[in-house]
Image (cartoon, rainbow, N blue to C red; front, side, top):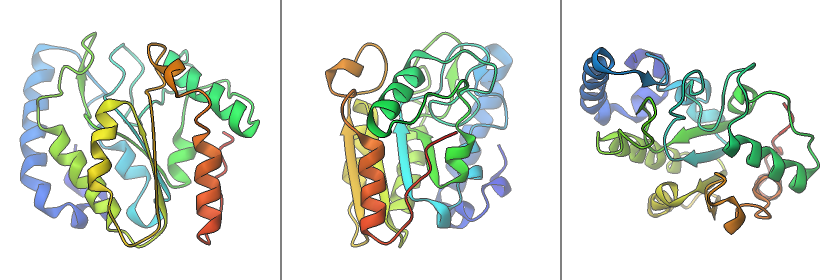
Length: 221
């Protein structure tokens, strides 16, 4: 990871630069001992692709996929050609149910990121085969700062908190600017039937944005 890769985020997160350096060093050491995802240098892809002035929605998950070839720095996304993980398949199922958008044949959500959807996890690295293995590293301090900085932006923003870890961020979202906060169970097979399916986040986001003078997000990819 390189601080200069963050663009406008680097100024908004200036007080996190030391933590950023510490996490970078810890990642370098960890990669000598184990396989770590996402690939080196792509941990902050979400911030690189969705700059502050473009953010209109934040989709927050837990931590990266922990199997080979999946995570590349965008929450819930995988590169084209990689089989869809169950969580992403469930997201597509809800998207089709909510807006009638046909499920894509790939899991690359870069188009969403480029349209202002910040696809962020609460923890930004993981060891192969060990879900949430880096939860105690301090990533939450950095992602808390990202959420707080996003909350200070002037434009209307919808926050989608999927799962218990993401929902802990709700306390950081208090702004005089228009905000929408949607909470639902994680889209994983273990919890998707407990309220994720039928939550209609995509239509709610678009309705909120249009009511506040912004364009709806094009969710087709």
